[in-house]
Image (cartoon, rainbow, N blue to C red):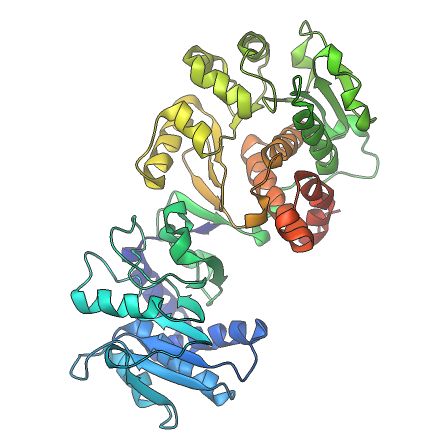
Length: 487
């Protein structure tokens, strides 16, 4: 998993990389620009698309100037708007790239010019070094960039957005942010969604051993991490090897939650799925003939490899929850009404088996831990809870935050805005319970479940856009295994 470093650490990482590769600062800037331009071309932008590059006086501006030069050499109609006064002192690499800018490229001062009404604006004004309140001229320039009528692409960070903290002022509102090497923490916070836009992480050649010198509890989960987290099964494996799980879900009028969770568990690979449901709803679950049903709470719950509790369960099931938690010694998954019962009866915390997985959305999280000022405070509360009780917690949303029992916090890279529909959390509960039942460690179950859930949501969203439903995601789960090369 990719470590997420602070703004102060990034300059040190750059220097470590330069020393290892034997690069000059300028050569590294050229490489970054080349990677960006390759990505830009791959997006299919027509070569007639007007491109305006807004550059500052620092190294972010130097990157922007190199990008402008390279795009111009490829035939794009490029202009450069400088976001600094003529007498401003430029960083050495920015000054060098300004001197290399072809004279045919039209350049002008952003402060005194009108912006074009369409095309693409590349925001290379302020970078990760931006801290504290912005000067008046910077506020003016950011507001002017935001008035642009076309598509805004931010380079590394939208100008004005601090790398590690919550924005207190104004920042560029990008349609897309192409961040360099790894996402900065601020880009993963929901408070900044309107500034970050869609997030793209650009590989600029950092190697994992270069991060060894930095201590971080924040990580970014990517596709290349997946294979090493998965269990492998041989051709003599039988259904018992793939896990016997129980889903305690569904109530009158909410049986869809049980159906979605059970089907997601099967699609994730469970060998045996049983649902504990109200007996009067037994016919409802007949739509999944592979699933077994039980109706009596007097069971030997320890017979199951994993149990998922909560989807559509109802708030009157606190006693059922207490009975199962008291009997179960293996990790369980708690979602939806199981979490709401926990919020109503804090004595249940002591009964939750070590390694269990909690999956609240933002409102459920607030019910459990009280309102938070911002996502950074939620992160701190989640970490304190997981360390105290030895649990894992998935705070669901864009770039879902997985807090592991050892305090590490991992942001997910997969997902889609089209997943904001009913039943998606029920599917995740089924997937997480399935991975636990298949013998995955709780940490690997969390990471695999969240990643595959988001990736399946992406696949479903590509087909159905705003019409995406939870069952579309569930049907796409097998394709996520194919994507990462796992049979």
